[in-house]
Amino acid sequence: MLRILVTTAALAAAGAAFAQEPPEGNRVEINGMQMYYEVSGEGDPMIVLHGGFMNIPMMGEIVGRLAETHRVYALELQGHGRTTDIDRPITYPNLAGDVAAFMDAVGIEKADVFGYSMGAMTGLRLAIDFPEKVDQLVFASGAYDYEGWQPAFREAIPQWNVEMFTSSPFAEDYKELAADPEGFPALAQKVIDLEKETFAWGEEVAALETPVLIIAGDADGMTLDHSVEMFHLLGGGVMGDVGAPLAASRLAILPASSHTAVINQPDTLMVFIAPFLAGETPRTGFE
Image 1 (cartoon, rainbow, N blue to C red):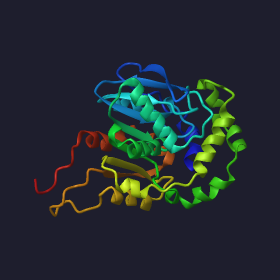
Image 2 (image 1 turned 30 degrees about the horizontal axis):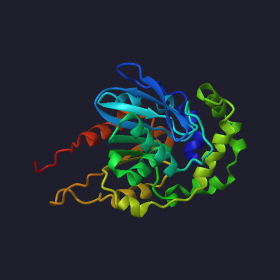
Image 3 (image 1 turned 135 degrees about the vertical axis):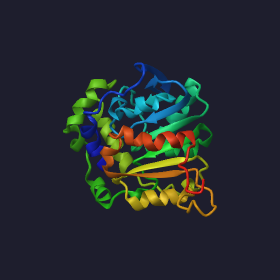
């Protein structure tokens, strides 16, 4: 999608994740693949999930910022980064199942989850399919329904082909970390197929009990109406000064922010993420 066409180029300049100590890299066998992950920080566990064609370094400083208060497990998903590919489509249920299996393999019973773009939707699917494993979900720049993507993006998807990606600069970047340096065309086809797959998770979102912080740019890949509707499905949008309790879920719209700009604003993101994870709310005028 639009986010995938430009994410890698826009994030290539992002700095390595900040942490008090260098993250520890590990591999574990998950569903037939060797999944690479990095661990940093101390505290309650948090899973970090990257976007399409991305890897851990491309997530920039947000990983280290989250590690200031959490034990962060940053994953590289099927075929991405240093994680091997397997003979299986990349789908959101498959990716969510991989994350659930990873948690079992490393002994994480329940965790907060931060997901960006493809990672956000993987995190949402994880909360739907394995609700017992997700404490709170930060859902950055994702959609819960195919129709929520911007019309220009939905019009572009049918034109995508592997050559569009193999001739791009990030096809070369892929080789720097990949377990199979020649595996990019296969990965590109799987991600294209993922983006062409329609989905509609509205009823499942409405049934969620997991608190969700929705983060979107005001010029993101999904429409603003879509993000607001997701907030409504999660019980948000009521007036908070007339006795009704605030919803456990929250909505944050970043101004002047495209899809790729969202992940490059760690300071701004943490203004919303930190109090959400801590269960803090701003004081009202009646306190």
